[in-house]
Image (tube, rainbow, N blue to C red; front, top):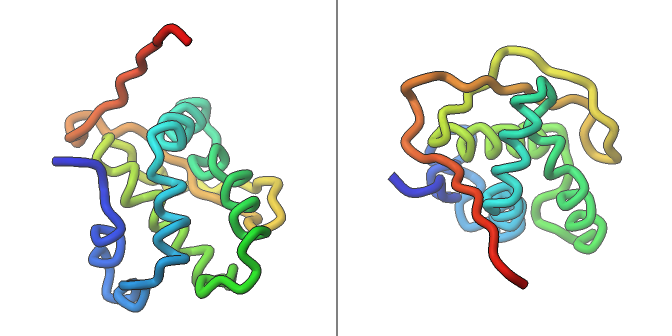
Length: 132
């Protein structure tokens, strides 16, 4: 099973079907789905912090650069970003632990924490190094 896709997110709930074809929502998903962001979300989760914390800065920068977005930062859309994070982390065996924590952000006030659920992962992170 490959990494989660935007279609996986859209199809994860009937409430999210309206995001199909929304390129601005898909861009936020793509930010969260970058390997570096997934790795960061896993690390922050392992440290007891909200997974979204590792991507907040990139999301804020994107939102600032795209004020006329078709994905404004309404409460519903912010919750959808949380669902994006959930869909992206599931293949790696990370699931919400039921806790939310306050975060410092211009957009978000809280975000969910995740825990590793043994035996559920279909993917793993592999860190490599290379000469520059």
